[in-house]
Amino acid sequence: MVIHPDFFWNTPLAKKIKSYDFFKYTVTEALFLSDKEEKIILDILQNVESEYQSNIDKFTQELIVAQIERLLIYSERFYERQFFTRKKSSHELLERFEQVLSQYFENGNLVENGIPSVKTIAEEMNISPNYLGTLLRLHTQQNTQQHIQNRLIDSAKERLSTTHLSVSEIAYELGFEHPQSFSKLFKQKTKQSPGEFRRLFN
Image (tube, rainbow, N blue to C red; front, top):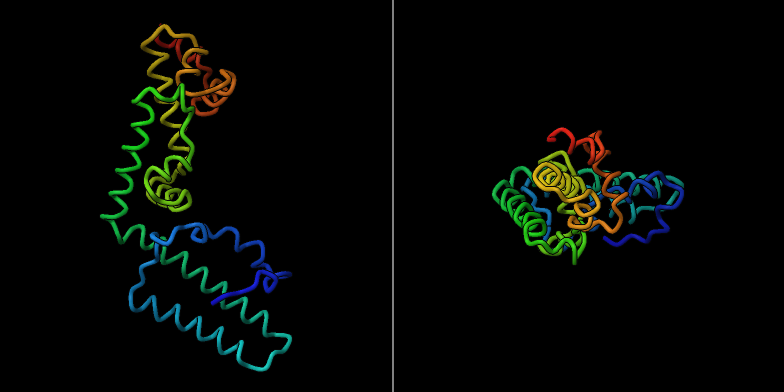
């Protein structure tokens, strides 16, 4: 089914359609359907085709858009179900994510390469950023960026409590260009400044 974007103008779906993450998944992140789910999808597609082949009137666009929205909602439901029912695959991806993230923080390349981006980590795992984000959100209630930030804060806490490095030096070691950005993130995540946290151990 191919739909011209103009078909959605002046409908609520025109804005809402951007919220469906699966449009940015790759071909390898396919949706696996049970027989029952496949029938639901085929029924919706047949409804669209039937409406398209009928005499066009003032209700045609609204009815077709309503069917397409049903299709998108069911697709989202089936994708979320898939993240849980295909446990082995999801579990392996979560483990791989932790490995990739750990490598970035343990190999000491943050100074040279900077803080890893969501895109960089997803590429390392050979999956799309959106697919990774949805997987993490459903299994951990946090997105990829939050996981990266949490790892940064954990590394910062370790350095603040076990070394005599200045806050600026720690910020630089963790890939921050500006110490102020590090301090702002640290306070946002811990409700304390790096200095206040360090004083707890002195």
